[in-house]
Length: 447
Image 1 (cartoon, one colour):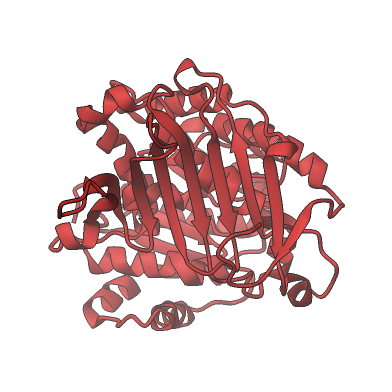
Image 2: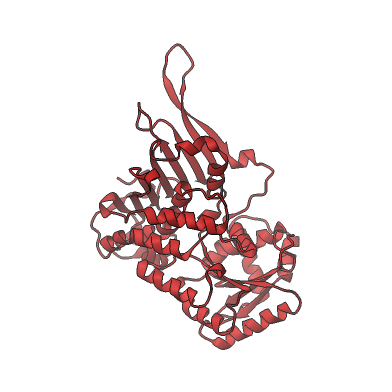
């Protein structure tokens, strides 16, 4: 166990889909690995009555759905550290009841408090208002927010104002779990500690940068959610834009959270607004059948951005995401220039499914000819770090919030700037299917 002060983690929406798929397994693993400070408490809130036994059953079910075994010691420890509170978001009296419970816990220990909003952003209003009204926004409290951070620039601006009316910037943690993946974390460290790449990290040597994420799955029954979001909002505005910034921003000399966010914001501010003529959108073939209507919501996007920074002028910055594709992957490919070929060498950071780094080189084939062939120097994390404890992205998210480290979270300014960049696409694509390409499920690419 760590020596930090023990937190109380209050989870709003603990019975929801995200909580069951990601958050509850992460909580169990943190207890199992003994990573949380001694005395950590978990409180789940629900509109409907939810007993402690019900919640433990939900946790075990979430792990069973992932084909994971539950160990008695971790379950017992979690059972001793967990509780529930029934809350109607509109009732101030229910939040006073929550505050009383938290105050009672503080009689025994000095807890920091984390309020995890595992609920749609549309439900934030009354909860944040009542947390503020009951004083649960003081300095000892932090709030964790799941994406989407708005649905366009206007709604994102309103959301930032709403949360900012109750909490200070240092208390707000806007979650982007892609930034907590091991390869994403390694981007800045790789650039900082491998000086052979430093003189090459500019438009004099780099031909293009391509960040992509493909999924074989479709929307998996999440009709209401996906009809409100689509591929551009779901993956591009948050995950892929953040990954692009970590790849190309100036590496701060002082790797503090504040310095990292300042460098990311400088990079985002340099990006020109997305041009519809430099973007394509698609929809996998069975989507309309799944949602039961002639929807124009995109399940695939590929767009090209450009930066005004001297180091990156003229370099195509490509972001690509698709559902219903023929494989699952997420990676970043840096393609280097060559006098003889458009693309000779490349450096790829593989985020999923197998995290690692690959350097593609041209090597002479054995024999009497001078034939050259592409080969890769391939590092897989699971092969090199066999004895290391693997930490899931949501485990890292929770631990960083407990530690008060905002490095892997998105700031208000970053969120608003990324929406500004993408707003022209939202405006152009609104309520029409012009240029929408229908592609077969399990497509290799969208043409």
